[in-house]
Image (cartoon, rainbow, N blue to C red; front, side, top):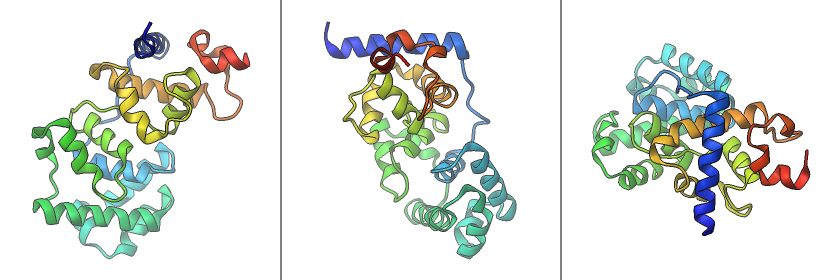
Amino acid sequence: MDENIQLIALAGEVYQRLLAVFGTPVWRTPLSAVDELISTILSQNTNDHNRDIAFNRLRDALPTWEAVRDAPLPWVIDAIRPAGLANQKGARIQKVLQEITIERGNLNLDFLKELPRDEAYAWLVKFKGVGPKTASIVMQFALGMPAFPVDTHIYRVSGRIGLRPDAMNAEQAHSHLSGLFRPEQYGPAHLNLIRLGRELCHPHKPECPRCPVKDVCQFYATTGS
């Protein structure tokens, strides 16, 4: 059997098993595209709890994105401090908001829905600090455009299961994994693979005996742990 067909079959099996165990996941309260963009920038190198605290503090202190864009940078940094890397993220957020305004004249990204998927993706990733994961999250969960975001959990889990080559980097994994799942599966697969990584497939001491996909997992077949 062709290797890609085997991988698609494996992805389908993993998808169905995770649905059976975890159910169909629901994304948190949908946000506008700009809200999702800023939230995802805040999520880099931190957890969801700290991201949400920082996001809410920022919106409380500066209720519009125009206010965030135009505020003194120290105000933004202070508001988002719970997310970590506040100096870097604060400057990055303001720069992105400023550049979007210069190009579009406003801070509404709904126009991206009218573009072909690849063009929308290319438009988002041209901004510094907006990588494949951030762009894919905005597209999938805010714009309703199919994209498969790959975070650290999905990258680890997909490598262990055997859904991607070990040598493939995270950026390459976005397009690779999107080719293994159907577009309507992207959201649930993304969320359930993250849950598998958080709850069982830990970076250290994964709980393989409890894993619902252990018998199709290369890591388990090799280590038996």
